[in-house]
Length: 114
Image 1 (cartoon, rainbow, N blue to C red):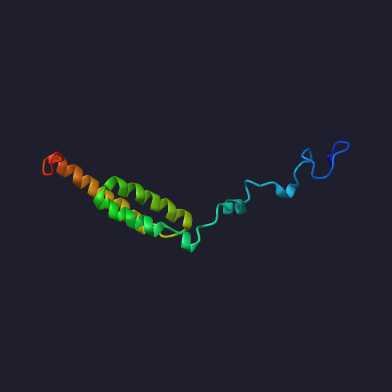
Image 2 (cartoon, helix red, strand yellow):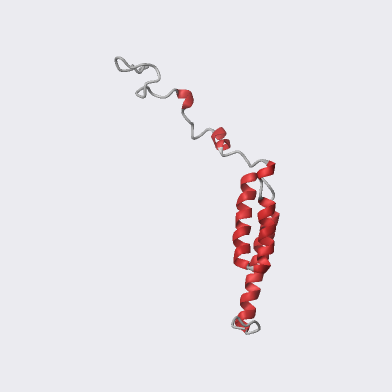
């Protein structure tokens, strides 16, 4: 037995009390809904390479900045579908520089006080 919904007396089509059309409802099991994520960035808007190169330069100037910008490049690469290789290079170089600097400072080879 099928029940149909009756609109309240005096309700017009499009009234907020009307239930939504079944076509407008999202089906969580529909794999097409996974593709509804924001569109990848346009080629002119992709900043993955820029962030990666800044991260590589930052690896030598200030390793913490290199790590953070490298992570930003990695996130941007994943969102835009670009290769994250340069982002990984920036992160790894930053980590190596930070570990080397910490080791040399701990051994007394580099003095922070001058």
